[in-house]
Image 1 (spheres, rainbow over the protein chains, first blue to last red):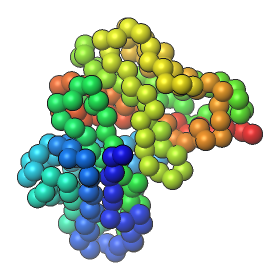
Image 2 (cartoon, rainbow over the protein chains, first blue to last red; image 1 turned 45 degrees about the horizontal axis):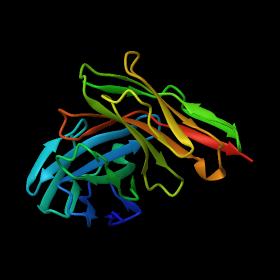
Image 3 (cartoon, rainbow over the protein chains, first blue to last red; image 1 turned 180 degrees about the vertical axis):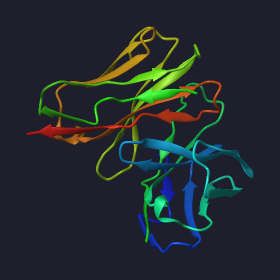
Length: 115
Length: 115
């Protein structure tokens, strides 16, 4: 079974704090993704990575950065957390160049509250 | 840019009945993938069903089937013999073959099963 794990299920931070969300996958997937999920908006892509040290901006990258130093780990960083970053954050991974699968596997999510 | 629209924020169905969730999308690509993902209350998102655009035959997975209308850019999910365990958020997603396997998600439909 593919496993995607996220470091925390719930996180409460103060405005202005630096926040790290960690994601680890155990299936040697090339692609990794960070989404935020908000009611009525679905999932929106923040950043994705298709290889170690490679990253590309998604649809809503402002206020976020990412790091991928190892293939299995993809970190989302909020440099200075703000209340409008209160949300559910989902990590996902998938194989690259796999037209048959094309499936993304998701972690359980981190509910971040910024006060 | 591609967009995915789910016009039903909430749906409910009696146990053992059939329900259909709607999804429309907009794209100029001819080759792509469409997905339905399920997110139960425990939040781990899982793939329900996948459809390749070049296949005319509608995909089926046990009680789940799709009605794929390529010309109309419509991709609905039918759940037959609804069970209590089907209660979840359902997301429709689009994956273009040009898009580095990124997915574009709809807003989601919350499905309630009434016993």
